[in-house]
Length: 299
Image 1: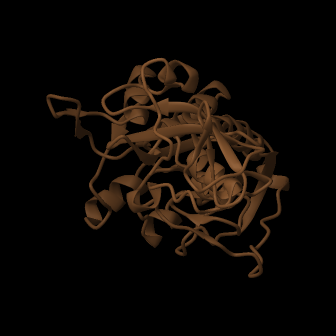
Image 2: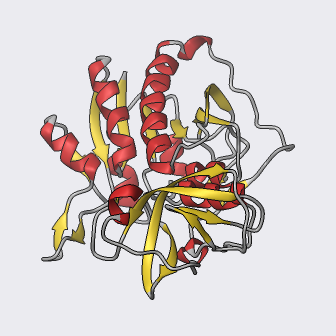
């Protein structure tokens, strides 16, 4: 098929590679414009743009589609369909209608649960037992279109957003190739009204750990916000981020250190497994403890 690919972050890269490997004719790649990054604040292309250019594919990065010329340029590609995954721009109806078979979106949740910006984070933070990816026909609403194909996967008891992100990216790549192969035989299923939830964008204000919460909630917060923005607590006046945790037996005053990096919560306790001190990389907790003396209580 003649395919337009639209994506921006690292999550989208395996999908682009899978489409190329499957033999589809990717006629153009759309991605967010380069942004200032690094110490020098020089414009850096998105991961998708960098990979597309390495593959020799043409790339466009309009700021938006408000200019009719951008819509016309998109339509002039005469694509069979567009594959959209974490692109980051709202597509007007004229763009959605331009490809002969419309636009397909790869969404990282089991719709209608977790429509919106942060479905991976929210699934872990909510304690969902499973998640997955959906191949959805795009329409004007936010992740409201009918679903062509869905693939489910369990969420591990200690899995972080970073780890689940990588698994769902690979699962999405496999799913879109299968969907395109089976496209004539797939029946779009409208999403039910029951079970709709919204995955609001993560706010950094959510990242402060409240040790009075039950251990299971604290563990989910830490894992759900790893690697970004990172759940944190104060240790001897230093803001320290945690990137891994598990629920363990134990009890005490909320925030009390019970030994090693085990911390009491409002109910139960958590063992912290990965720690990031200010200005340093994340490390296993036992390594951090070699150079840090914990107070009797955190927070």
